[in-house]
Length: 104
Image (cartoon, rainbow, N blue to C red; front, side):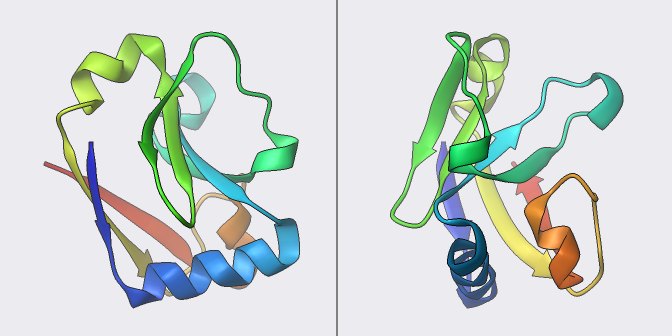
């Protein structure tokens, strides 16, 4: 997977890291949280044997369930930031911002 993002993402990630330490994004597999990528503190998220890393970066990693790997592994992902609260299960919620994930 190819991931692109701008300075707005870098700044928000750095703010989150000051508060929570290393972070990860996890593309959920559906159900109650839909199929969205959420931001978690790495220390608080238990990765399982069925989780795979699609992107390993300097400031964050991006994971999903192995059943979704074939779909996402060749995708281009652009991440941006919106100045409004998004999913309350994602770390950026308390900052009044939300990450926006666009796959192509």
